[in-house]
Length: 350
Image 1: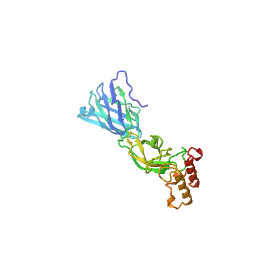
Image 2: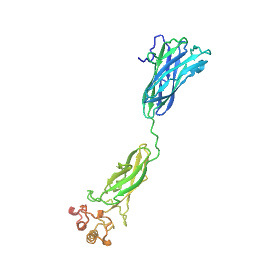
Image 3: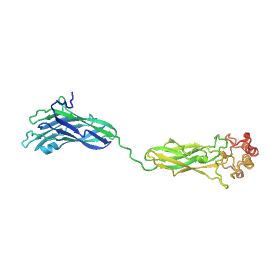
Image 4: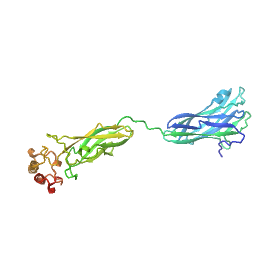
């Protein structure tokens, strides 16, 4: 049976680990003392030290000031360190006089200094227990070699997880792009083929990304629309553009610059990057800011003469006003009828 210091009622000689509680961080090296506070004359001591090797490791054991202050000659054995089993075995020392005989010492002092390193990968408490090799408990002897009554005060090392290194730099946002770059405004609020665009950015950071949003308020969406990580460092969202959000300046269409906000775990944000997206009026194949009879005729002529550059279209997605995924004669007719009967739901531009 291992014993950790049974204290008789009359015993006051104390073997103590100090400090009794040591609080350190992962990877930190430090020392603890094994001290003796004698109640009577002593000449030597021995102990083993038990610890949790998954929390701390022992680097070395050195003699303390109790020898240096009192011994003309000393014998000290630092024991054997086993950081797998979590034990230092057979640490002992004798204080001798000049003739080599045991010397009486009655002053308190440090018997051994134990240097320890907290493990990098674990955190928690590790009890430090002074124990003896069975059947001997922690032993303090007088100059005649007789054991003196003792009490033992053990200790604990508490290892805190090392804080993550602080990141003060904002995320890096690159390669903003829109696929499709040009979409029509969604006049019937039913996004179909060619009426949505996938917006992507690539984001890197020294820490983890907390959130990525994009401001879609200019095209009828949320000002803080979340973007989703779709693999690697690519963040994405798919959007349409609400009716009447085409940006016509009076002479041309201009793209929107949709601002991205990337924020990392430490609250650093980057709002310097925007994704360009062009929105045109649904059906404005003549690119003049108007959807009218001439737009319908352009589509019909394009259907009849697809190779004639006179009847070219800016993009098929602007011309597909029937919402069937095909640009043909029917789209031209739909625009003409819509121009003539704008209130008739039968001719709504899809």
